Image 1: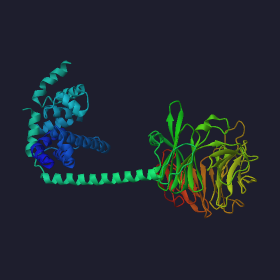
Image 2: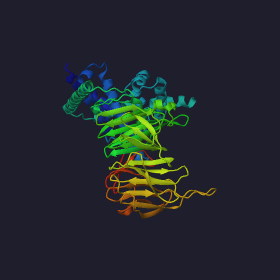
Image 3: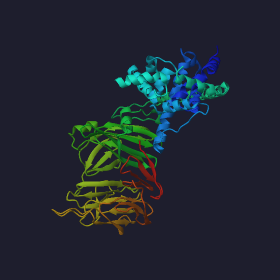
Image 4: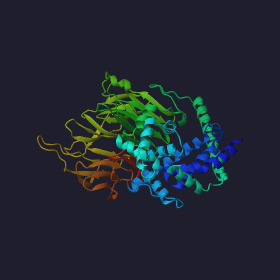
Length: 169
Length: 395
C-alpha cells in the first residue's frame, strides 16, 4: 500500500474517533479538529516515518494531544494576563444537558487529570501505557486518575465507588 | 458504556471531516518547504566548511591570526553561556562607529565574585572575549572597539597578568592577545592607545604591551580622548582631588593644562572629534574635614568652541546629578541632569530635551550618542543629538 493511501485509510477510519477523544480533553470541537488535522498533516508531511510506525493511531493521538497541550498553555497564559476568568466556554449545541454538564465538569479538572481520565476511560489505555505516553511515573498517573474520578463521580456513575475509597483514606 | 465514552461517541457523530485532499495538500506543501530549507542549510554548511578550510582560523591566546571572513570565527561556548545568562548584567559599552562596538558582561558567582566576558561587533560580524575573573574594559581605538581584561595591578610580578587578554575585531578578523607588562613610561608611541583605569595606561594594539604612563603632577587620570589632530586630552587629578584638563601633542613629552574649576575635584570632559568643542562639568568642591560633602552644590556646565581658550557657562545644576558631557563638531553638546526634573541639557543648542527615563549616562562617537540603561542591560542610542532614541541589547 502506498504511504498516501495508508494515511487516507487511517483518516477515514480514525479521524472521528480521535476528534471525539480530543474533544473530551479540550472541550472545544474546533480545537479538537484542528489538533487532529495537524496530526494528519504531519503524517502526510513525513510519509516514510509514518509508514514505519507500529501503532499509527497512537502516534496521531500523541501528536494531536501535544497540539492541544500547547494551545492550552498558550491560552492559559493569554487569559491569565487578560483576566482571571480562565479559558472561555465552548459547548456543542448537539449535546444533551447531561453531556454539557459532563464537559463542564471535565473542564474544571486540572489539564493533567483530564488527560489521564480520557486516555484511560475513553481511549482504554492501561496505566503503564499512559505513563509512557505522558512521560510520568505510573504512580502519578494513578493519582491523577483517582483525583479526577472523585471529582467527576457525581456525573459518572462508574466513578461513584472511587469517592468512597477516597473518603476512607 | 460509561458516560465518558458516550460523550466521545456523541461528538464523533457530529463531526464532518474535511476532504482528505485538503490536508494532503497542506502536508505536501510543508514537505516541499522543509526540503527546500534543508537544501539551503546543506549549501550554507558546505560553504562554511569550504571557507573554514580555505581560510583557517586558530584560537591560540597570544598569537595573532586573521579570520578573513566572519563565518570562520569560532564560537566560545563558555563566553556565550555567560553573555546569554539571564542573571548576567551589562557592565559597559564602547562604540567606535555606530556599527562597531564592544560590550562587557558580568555574571555573579558564589562568594561575591563575578565572571566576566565581552561581546564585540563590527559591521554585523560578532565575536566574544573569553571568560575571565577580572573585569573587561571596553574602549575605542580609532575606528575599532576592543575589550581588555587587565591584571589586578600594574606590578610586573602580579600573577593575574597570565589571565589578562585583549580581544580585537578588525577587518582582518578576530585577534586575541595576552597582555604583556612593560615598565612605566612618561612618553608613549603613536600606535599606542591611552586608557584610564585609575592610573593612565598605554596599550600597544599590535604587541599587547600594556604600560603605565606617568605624568608629573598627576596621580589619577580620567577619560583620555584623542581628537582628529592627534592631540590627547584627559582630566588629570592629584590625590588631593583638584582636577585639570591636560593635553599633549607630542605623545607625552610635554603636557599643557588648564583649570576646570578652581579648587574643585576631578571633573568630566568631552571633546569633539575636531578638538574645538569642549564641554566640561567641574567636580564638586572638596569636603571640609568633619563636614558633610557638597551635594546640592551648583555645578556650572561650561562650553568652549575654540579648543578651551574661552569658556562660557551655559547652565548650572546641582551636584551630583549633572553628568555625562558630550561634545559635537558643530559647537554644541549634551549633558545629562538626573535631579528632580530629568533633563538632557544641550549647551550651545537651545532648550533641554527630556531624556529617556532609564538613560543612565552618555557618551558619543562623532554625532552618534549612546548610553546604558541604569536599571537594565539595554544600550540606548541616538543619531540626532538626543532628540530620538533607540534601544538594543548588546549581547
